[in-house]
Image (cartoon, rainbow, N blue to C red; front, side):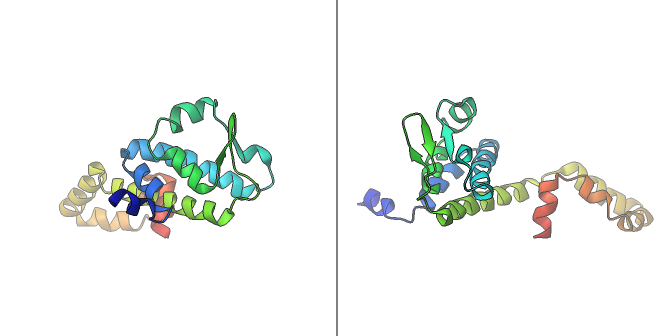
Length: 161
């Protein structure tokens, strides 16, 4: 009964939930690929080359295929299996693709935000500098350009959202 009930849950939940069971490093690598596939279709909807993924492609076969939940996310996006490719047909819902893409992107952003505070060198240095020399913290606050340079560009974008 539980299995039947879980198979009736919304399609967005199960493949992404499965994908989220992977370690942070694995999830972030796979998310990057899945988001690239989705973004290419959204940017170039009439380009056939972006609507097709060759199953024998080394990136697909080594970085996506072995990861739990990854291929299922492609199917949830709307990809269908052909003989040698996964194909995003013209009849597939772009809205569904966007939903899955946004869910993966949201999880990726959360994971990146969780990683950000765990940078002890930045926090320790800031805390000790402000405690030891109040003037230096005042001087540092007049230089708003410095902190963003310590962070990857993707984290800077997330903070602005």
